[in-house]
Image (cartoon, rainbow, N blue to C red; front, side):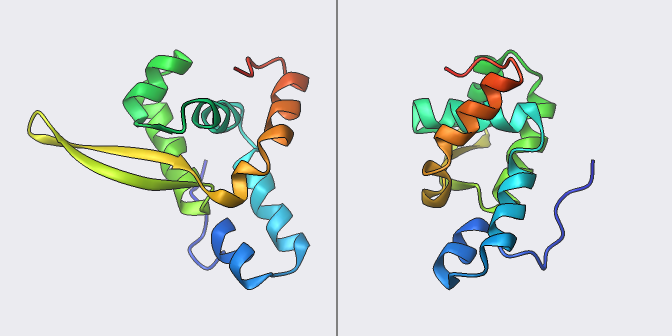
Length: 120
């Protein structure tokens, strides 16, 4: 799966510029196009902030898979880097939902429910 192309405006940039709704909806579509990304958005909606390691533990998924999708969501602007904390000689990145996506959590829950994904 390829990462999003750089020229695409992030969800936050689109909300600030008030771009056409078709472009914003396409960006939301990419954010919710994979079941693990829906689960990440829902997990962040419940916990407010989390690191990829904590998300992997919560979702029962591999850290590499979760990290990939967290980077994808961050590039789209669906989630934001909130803090970087030193941990045992490394850096822990903590993410939270972008304000534009917080409004879309009910949609993510509906999508997750229709796909049989856990929504809490």
